[in-house]
Length: 141
Image (cartoon, rainbow, N blue to C red):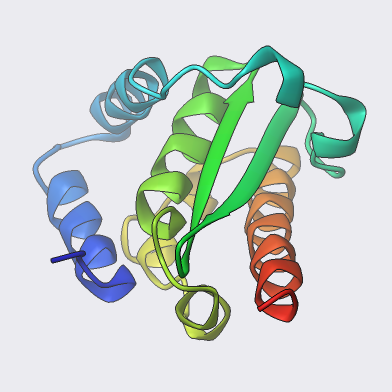
């Protein structure tokens, strides 16, 4: 059975709680970025670029049965880790669940306060784009 978005968020909070300082948490984010499945080159197009990100972030979404599957990539290693974290939360979930969930895990792990203002804005932009895709794909149901 698929985990709920809330269960995944709680897991992420637990994962980050294992680390003592932010250098270790950054290293973990970088590892997550490295484990991000390679996005198909045909999706690395301007239409899939997230506006408001300092680095380049491509995000693609498609419907698989009643769930949305996201793929993404970034040219910056920390940003790639952040998008990997978001995909872990939102990919393979139903559009309504994606649209209705609060992303409180970001505050609980202290991510926003440890990012530069431009990266924090990028994070908000990534979540907005994920939710926009969910809205668009839900409308197609």
